[in-house]
Length: 221
Image (cartoon, rainbow, N blue to C red; front, side):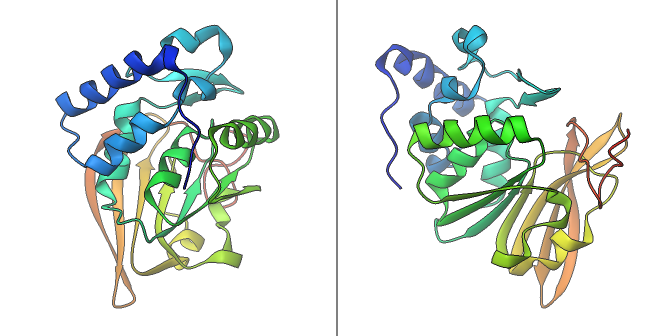
């Protein structure tokens, strides 16, 4: 995948972010390289672009946020990606994590339920030069069966449980990362399919916006 170079005015800030991620324990060189190559300032509102390379969550509108870069990096490192995967992302959001994934895998399929975010993300992904990304406007909790199975699934919002359609769309040997819990307290889980059986393990406490949809939280929450 070929992406356009990040503007020179942000080069120093981008490198400092990579250094910060190293200090916080990120060791996967492919993940660090993806962060270095991805123009995060293109995925945040213009009024806060000066904060784009801080390791902090930032508002992107419609009650949503772009997560801390260290959260994205940790997520991606946990999946142990090799570059040959087909990945489903539930919750495109700003599109930043989508482009990070585009550097790390063969094909990204990403679903966003909010029309305004979908449009903004699509434009930002195009500006970043990603060519191996397919986007869908819809309910991410039902997955994208047309292109299943997936070697990895990343869910970028918290669900009361693991949506069954997503587990069904995991390939053999596939892994899914998803925050599970209540509105107030959540735990990141890794689900993995081995010999047709899905097993889970806890990763640690996290805090995400709710996953809304047929197999997540009700839209009225």
